[in-house]
Image (tube, rainbow, N blue to C red; front, side):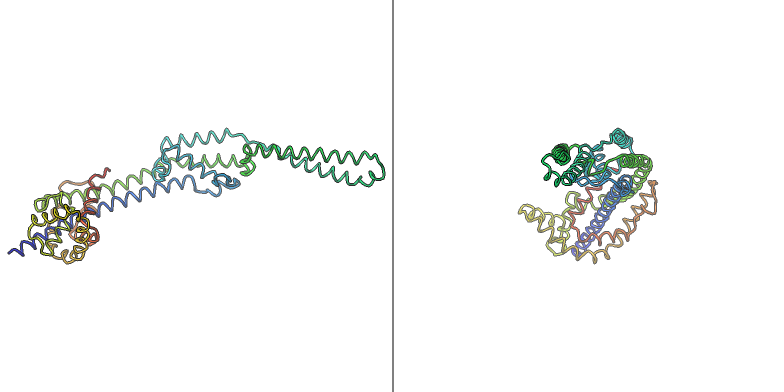
Length: 372
């Protein structure tokens, strides 16, 4: 009689664990849907700012200071403007909003106002170098005549011209080095009228894609919310059911110790819930609770498959009860996705056997507090 009572308590605790495992699986579904939505939002940013990226950046070399192309620098600038720097998913969701269009139009206007700076000093360097070489050659051609004749005007003209050109070359080079901070980007990036037109076309294209991005973001949010609703509906129904049916067996606050309590029953260390809770309290007071929970979880993981077969009747009863309740509520969702089968409960128990009851309760808390 005692053994039958212990066995019934054990079965009830495994049913309770099956319910928590199922809720934990719904938490996984929420997290996966959330992760997928974030990934899709991030892709939208790539599609708008980096599609045809190579063509957009063609002719514009990377800046030596930050090694970034125009589209990459624009991406960084917009992320700073949006306030979502380092959060690609939120930035992707931001694209398509009125604020994103305003920011892009500001950048476009700034690009249109940019003046094409003509390189200074560099032409002077080439000209003085060219003329200097010419004067030196001219002087060299008249060197022999100068030796024969003390006063050879052509030689001294060539020599003087070469000296003047050398001085001009040094001056132009010095000024170019001094001003290179102002013009280095012009020289290295080759920014010119063509590049400016490419940048403007790139920005106009990005702006034209914003309405499409808005619709894509809305579709992503709609799909994600549908997944959230189904998971929340299932988890709420299961949690409510196990609380009503097994809350009297074990207080909700002690469900995180479910594996440890089951372990005490399985090993014969306790015959009643009260005895098991006293042992839990003793482990808590001696600060051995973490090790005890881990040890019990390993033991229970091995016992779950056998237990899953013995609690099929209870799981079937719970799933029928849940489905009747949800159908009566006329849940406005895909009924085939909302209905819960006995097999789902059983599979959840087995698949979550590698997670201890404390981890399951963390998932329960997560989905119960999750806002759609």
